[in-house]
Length: 81
Picture 1 (spheres, one colour):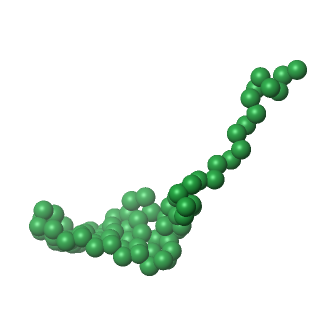
Picture 2 (cartoon, helix red, strand yellow):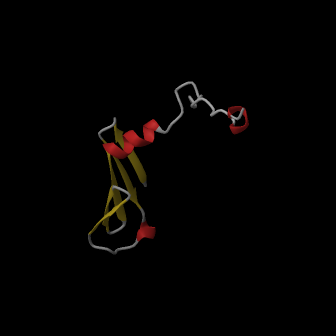
Picture 3 (cartoon, one colour):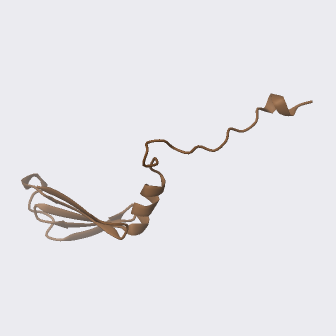
């Protein structure tokens, strides 16, 4: 069973429960790429802080599916006399 809940830009919680994960570890707390990973027997919870969610949101396309791109730089050959 997999569950994902996002609380706006505050934080997100990903939960996975599966027999494939096995009975170990009894409890484990790790951090990877700014996310906190909590492991239990047959379960794992990943907590994502708001800073990562906000950074992800800035990299997305606009709502209408287009991205605003910066103006292209002038060609080097046009700058020469």
